Structures are given as C-alpha cells and as structure tokens.
Length: 247
Image 1 (cartoon, one colour):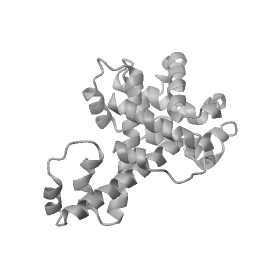
Image 2 (cartoon, rainbow, N blue to C red):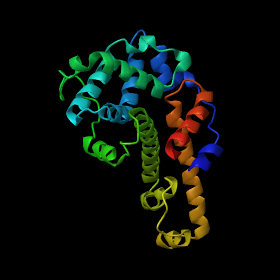
Image 3 (tube, one colour):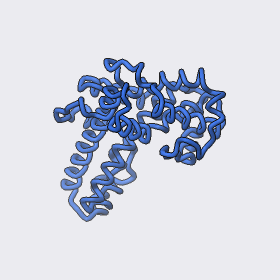
C-alpha cells in the first residue's frame, strides 16, 4: 500500500473546489455550499474527534454529547472565522477547535443530550468503542489516538469507495478476496492459491492486484485533497499518514 501511494501521481486538481477550500473561502457568510461541504467532512471524520474526547477520561455518553455539541457549534456558529486559509489542514483545525471547545464549554455542552440539535452524525458507537478498547490507550496520548483514528478513518473511506466501484463492476468476490492485500495484513493464501480460488491465472491475479493498489492510492489522495488547501499539502499529509500508521 505504501509503495503504491508513493508512486501514484495524482492528476492536476483545482483545490479551489475541494470541500475544505470551499469551507475556508465561505467561512464568513455560511453559504449553502460551505455548509454542505463541512457537513460531509464532519460525517467522514467525526470518529477521530469522538475518540479524542473519549480518551480525555469521559464516559461514552458524555463524550457523545460533547462531540455532537461541538459539531453543532461548528456548523451553526462562526468557528471558522478564525481559521487561517494558509494553514488549512482540516485535521489540525479540528484538533485546535475541539480543545478550545472542551476548555470553555464542557459544562454547557453536557446539557445537550442525544437526540437533540445534532442529528446528522453517524454515531457508530459499538464499533468505535471496540476500537478504543483495543487501542493501546495506556501508552497513547489523546493527541496520538486522534491522529491514528484520523488516518484509519481516511483509509476506511478510500477502501469503502473502492468496494463500491468493485461492486458496480461486478467484481464483488474478487474484491473480497484481494482487499487484504491493500491493508498491509498478511494473506492466508499464496497468489497461486488465490488465483485457483478465483478461477484465474496467477499473472492475471497480479495484474488485478496492481490495478486495485493503484486505484486505492488514487482514492486516498482524493480523500486527503478534500482536507487540505493546496497540492503541496497532499504529499505532506501522505508522509504524515505513513508516520502515524508506522508509529
């Protein structure tokens, strides 16, 4: 996975129209386009924020209430007016913003319970709590856990998009067997055994894996591009992603 990401060169993109750039450029006027873009980013990356809040020693209920209140304020208040577009990494902005929020608004936020003002967040509590239980929380700082959760969420979104594309092309079974080769896990079968299972040749299978890895790398880059303000920051974020996942 890492080699394919490093070697794939993303096509030229107009960063003026990425989600985060739209949010930054419209921070003062709350345009419909900015709100839609921010809602999509919040849907995609609420888990890292919840994980961070939860790791600060809060109960699941309190962490959920605080995370939902934070996102409500992010959407409905003027939090974005203080963002510097020259430092437009959504990941960094969110961490600074949630720290400020926790320091100043915790008691007030606890009054807002589930089912209240925020309804768009996909609070997959069971899977998130399972992730937190398996994370080495005793030796991992909240900030590090946030970075790890952010990186995993980004990869999961790219993998989900790749799965959708495979399903649309009628390659569901192939994807199910080959996805392990994209995640860095050790497959239980050799290429020859996988080829036999999928009723294809080993050479054809290796070509299919190369195509999947190439497309996965493209999708990861596209996901990253939605959370930064320039093409240069894409490469910087990819290096950061590798550092976080390898650490």
